[in-house]
Length: 128
Image (cartoon, rainbow, N blue to C red; front, top):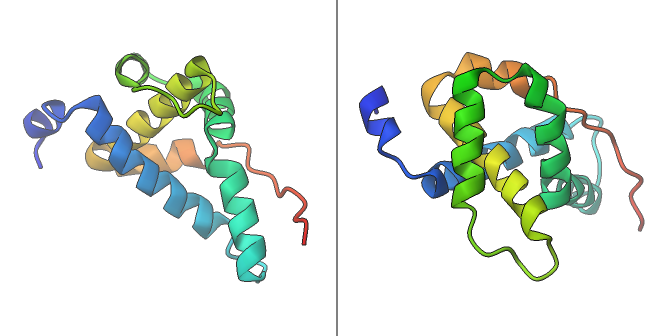
């Protein structure tokens, strides 16, 4: 895809791609040291929840360029109805992060990698 084509992609479609890219990044981040499948699942779920994604966006906000902030704004405005368990504002911020990730994945992978490395990922305790 060229930039003109990517600019025609809806924020919802960018968020769809960004969600997959973000989850793969999180899964890869927790690969070592080796864990049980259950432990992997618990760690990943804790990071891909809307609440965690919204916090990660705030962590990155000061690092974003004007273009990236515009993508974030478009993603927030395109957020659909949130699931019942999630506040609409939090859901909008999570969708914004996914939209940004999807956009950067398609347009500027080195920049995406740079931003992902700034995320504040921590290992939550796993209950068995």
